[in-house]
Image (tube, rainbow, N blue to C red; front, side):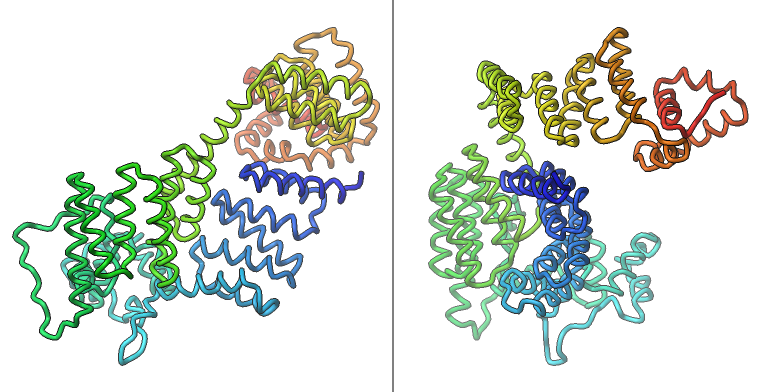
Length: 564
């Protein structure tokens, strides 16, 4: 079997794992494909997608960059790269990436959507939508008197004593888009208030009261109650009928929130419904109504309201955070019903709109629970034994692919049986799938460190991979457990016969071993080796430490270290 054919098989398995939500496994399988055929851009692109699913966006970006490097005329590579850059907060780079992809394929809808999304995020980050007679608002952090103004203001003067805060200011001066990362930092909000000459908190409240923005106060969020003696705002003399209705709708919403907190859900519904009648374009009222149904466990009506909020939000191009909340609530409905697959689906949709730590945590819990429940429901030792027997029969007939299928089914039915991994490893070895055999051997040994066959199978796989030093270590483990084991002694003999490299070639090969590289780069080991060189008697003392002893034996068996 050629490397390219084997790599394609790993890719197919990776695609299946990705579709089934096994993202860690997908990353591993695509990695195997890349190791066999590192010139194939598709493998890097697929692994970039799997890394993104795991929220490992830096790793996703690395693979996306490699995709573009290998295939610069492939639009999908730019889509992968743009997505990773967005989640890393590098919006300008993401915009340039999407634009580059569209130069190659102007009609690519995925790239178009990505560009539109990043443009919107940049607009929000830079305040580009706030235009006046003088055009867009400039970056306030580029004020030449920035530090002086902050030092002279009583609310911000102490901030400048913190070097890390000054570093943030310099970053905001260079790149105003980075403000997105600091919007929850109250110090930054105070600085903006000073620089703009506006109390941002008061401005936001006044703007919300006037109906000029959609602040989305979810009743489940536990917002502050209004004071009973709060002086009502005077109605402007020239207030239009539309403005009056919006203000009336906001009052109805507040009444609904009050009823909600008292758990007077029917009363809350009446007020939210009235608010929707007065201002049907305010998505908040719909999501608040959905929150009531959620508390009442009226899952059907809750889902309907959330769907309506999402549809209306997309139609009106509402804040993506509101749409994300509606989608997250749909996920929570399915979560409460233990319908994990649908819960994960809507949590994913919500996270696509807006990253939220709580939603991400809920999604991860749902994924873990679903996996555990599926495994538990499938667990059946009796059926596992049947499949194992079928596998043994297929193996004896030389039908190794079918034997592997049977052993795999047996493992799914009883994943705690170490012997099953050993059997499948042996079948993989017969097909020269040594990497897969080695993984099964390691799993087998992890489950039962005294299981001799696990080490024997590992030794066979390592011989097939030409890793003779590691094979000898596996056979030595067998001899430690059973000094008279003939199969282990035969394995040792094969290793010695095949290890016909001259010392220089052997050392050169050893230096390519990642384990050897790690040992030699360890500062503690470097000190120990130097000590041994200066004082050979120090070896005896170091060999008393099992961990150090294993590393020294590894270096000796590789030919890199000799002891006189």
